[in-house]
Length: 155
Length: 151
Image 1: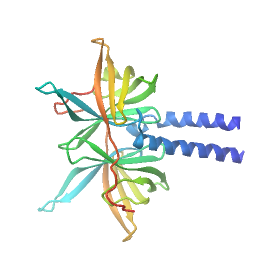
Image 2: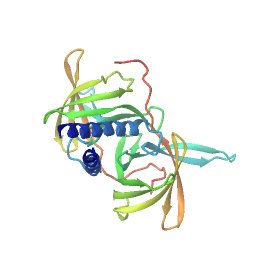
Image 3: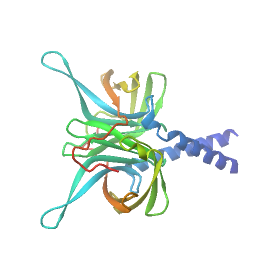
Image 4: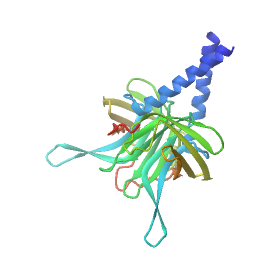
């Protein structure tokens, strides 16, 4: 039992070190992602704009999602859970508690993914009801200067 | 040996599940926080204005700050690092990289904190240049209850 506890402590230590900053400096699916909505203009061209939906995929196989509030500066957490990468182009999301009022997440989501480049993620989630794959585009939130729009910037 | 490995694996998975739950449903310093400004208004009363600045304090002792410009939804991370709670009212922030203030790269900041309630955090950081504690108010980002059972 003593050995088990020592191995456990060592493992937690290693996982903690590995987890540090991997969300921020990742080149993989792990990261802080912002959903991009693509709509068609009347002239047939594409209009690309952030939707206000975010997903943080942590290095420890957990994730959470949030959306911007429609009533001023603010966020609302909508979902959290764990995920498992099942191949170099698929993973599954296990939603522990779905808080979304949008009706999209279920308890288990089969996902396809492709990193178009290190900061652009193409996702598809499986809609079980009609057996289709719905595409999504996500861009990585990266380290950049904050434009606070007149608000007091943090130190 | 096999039993030991299974035991360790189970303990690790349990810890990870709790860590995620801690972040999303925490009532402690761990959590996703939105900075607020307290403005004095003319009759001497205060008004709280939410800013678009956020701080994520993870259960694994890492943290990062980001800003969302709500008009264009431009979203950027300003700095990140790790933190260590040193008492029930103090912690230190070790900045790994600070985009806007490179001089703060690899720096350590002394912080004071007090939870006014489970969703309101009063924080102070020590400004070395002016030798003063600078107060900040942070509000917890919370989950939204489902309107209907979608599952």
